Image (spheres, rainbow, N blue to C red):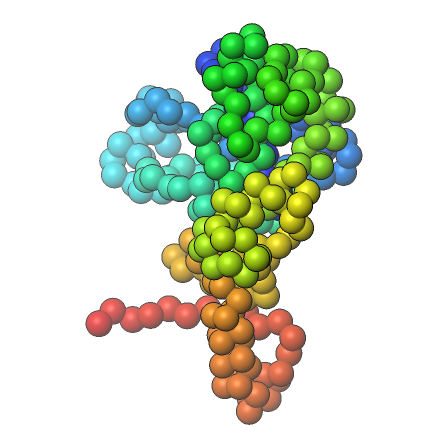
Length: 244
């Protein structure tokens, strides 16, 4: 079950060092971890002008793949939202986001260099601070990555579906996320994400409320029941729709 946490703060506050330490601590505890870095600067690219892959992109290639004996790098020249990115990480235990300080629906730990910064950064999804803090939320010392990982294990939750379907008994996904972060709701309580039916269209996960999941599951099971081998528990179906 993927759980997500954000490490946020102002520029040059030391967020990357915090992410490095947190990732190492989580990996040492046996977790699989992915990271996402927010780069607000327009025109940014990991590629370097003049390289062969850069020339491929300049020629118009929408996807450039660089394959070496030790690494696979895929560069796509398009926009993507966080839901799509997290979809690629569903098999991991944790996703650590650097930046994204205005994001909602996930536990965030703010890196603050002063009490004033902590006050400016704090929001409802802030579960703790590093360096300086405000209110009754924990303030961790810089470099205490063990305590940081403890906090992440306790507070980080999976992504929520964004449907406001009410199946979790909360009026909105936002309210559910806030409750799950503080432990008043189960972390896996968003059935739109954790349910048994997963719909992915053109690489993007489409959250489904429980009624739609049950409808799809029962309809598909009924259609396949007459086929030899069609009564298995897990069904993977890929559909390619023709034009027109």
